[in-house]
Image (tube, rainbow, N blue to C red):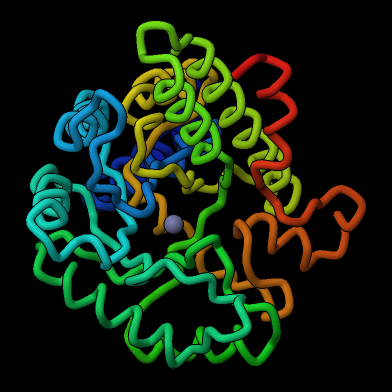
Length: 324
Ligand SMILES: [Zn+2]
């Protein structure tokens, strides 16, 4: 071995040896997560609303448990953005406890699920909405100070967006941004309607499942591609789903589909640590998914961006043609 190459090897060993001895576990875990996110798209799961009704043949406790068991099986923690209105009674309290006990986070989705873009809604009304639900979820150990706007509507003009952002800040809340939005709620609505019409035995549940998975993966790929173009990297996505029968029936297959298609699946509170959630779009481009807002703000996608970003109108025709 030549002297030069030996010295070089010694240098390498010393440098890396020293580094390794000083790197603590947290840094290693961080490096590991960076390594994952550099290579593949990343998704996390969030659920909105919180329904406490029986749905067709399924008792509330039963279909709620189905969602929780899918998450448990995957060892995955979600964030549940709940409305306050139906959480004060016995069933509402049971629902919050069942999610909290399994280690999921409870976040704020207003009390009454008003649309903030409606003329008569103000930051003052929404402050009351936020406080009422905050007082419910703070009774649970896993509460988190994230607020998600009903219908993802953050205000239709500068003044309203600025006033609501100031209000959230005053209460130490952050926007619980969605990066992947979809119409799972509409597929669920059509599925439940069909079961009511013809009964569960005659309903082709698998056809609804196929459509649901195909639709959500299509929207996930759309927002991932758009985000990658703008950011030059795979961000941590937060997918919006709802607490409904479709999640109870299809969530495990959806998680598996993400994994099979090469996505990393992470806990939702980990996902929110991504710096992307500090990039707040300007007030005149607020609302919809964070990726949609960023794309709108860039001015580069005016031809391709649709408004609303997601809606039943885009899926209705496809479902009609498939007899769903
Ligand atoms: Zn909602």
